[in-house]
Image: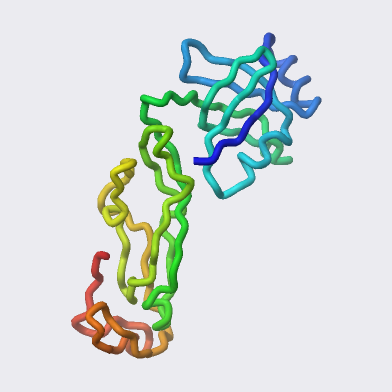
Length: 215
């Protein structure tokens, strides 16, 4: 997983007045957990733009003005309810030999057979929570939706990986191809090379004998 470096300054005072003054100066109060004791520091708000305002997941290298460096992930963030300015960020320290839980974005690739037949792709999960060693954290989880036909659902069980554990129940649906109200009937080739028709009856109802399948 790619890392973003945050250059910060260790905080000596953590009172409300000091925190307000820091925010007025464009600084974001932060706390790093996971070590022997919490580490309080601040960094310029602009330093977090590539970490916060992105759909991608990143680890963080926190470099403080006292020479100390920490590997971490962002654990929690607070925004101002009106201005959306960053008010506070919590980080959690990473260790090479300790698994960490993190939400990873899902990337959908391919052109689904079901979509070609007039179905609609519904993305039920845009992020998945996983547990892995820091070295095994992926930038994203890639899913090829090409084989999915109208009515098919893709469950997290199809995404099992030796590098990490997905922390969702087996019946969690990641995506599915829903039947559109006016699906187009087209000829598609199935996995055995036999051509067949995919479509719907008038009004969007499922033809008799058709059942949802798990891919």
